[in-house]
Length: 82
Image 1 (spheres, rainbow, N blue to C red):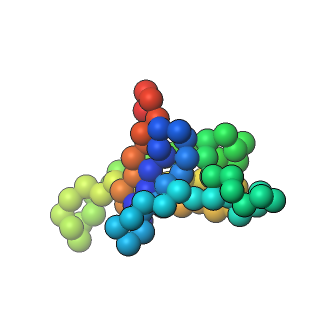
Image 2: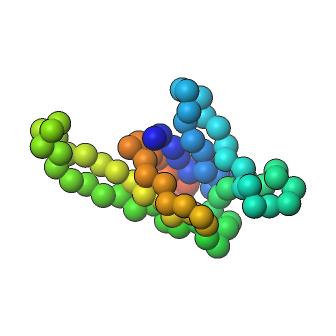
């Protein structure tokens, strides 16, 4: 899975080659984007390990959210200073 936190702190997924801002399904208005302002939005954690099948180092980023932890093969944090 590919994704990023954009400059505004919103979570964005890349699906089918297109970027999509993720909306919070738990907000009554359903127009609040998922992002860093939520107390349940974790910090991205990068893990590196050697994959013998690919004979290369593999980088995975995990991001904990309110009801799920997501795993990204490609992840970028576009916030200033990150």
